[in-house]
Image: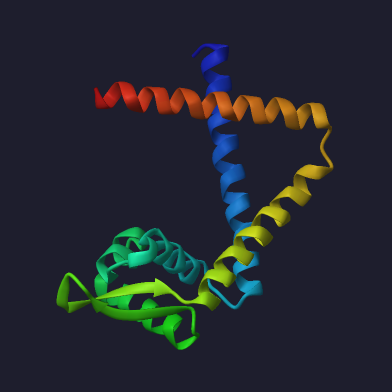
Length: 153
């Protein structure tokens, strides 16, 4: 294996490890607001539904759980005042889940805290190293996105 290939593998491993570390930091932010990682995932899935809300099946798909498990999460979030359920205007038998005002506030605050906690660990690094890392990661993302476009064509 070439040196460049080995370095690429090392970078891939480092990016994955950094992402996991950021996720663990995020978990601390969620717990600050009394949320588990899964509860945060459910709130984020509801938020993805936009102003019309999300169907429980959408939440289940986003969380990678059964519809019944998603419904349980939704009920718990509703009991905490974080989400509201309403009849689906497109289907009388279904429901749509939307964030309550409190749920939106918590979701935004968790996101801000998550970013601040992660940023604290970066602040001690030299500015030049941070700038190089930002440039490298932006280039990496750009190349990944370009490859995805090529695959779609």
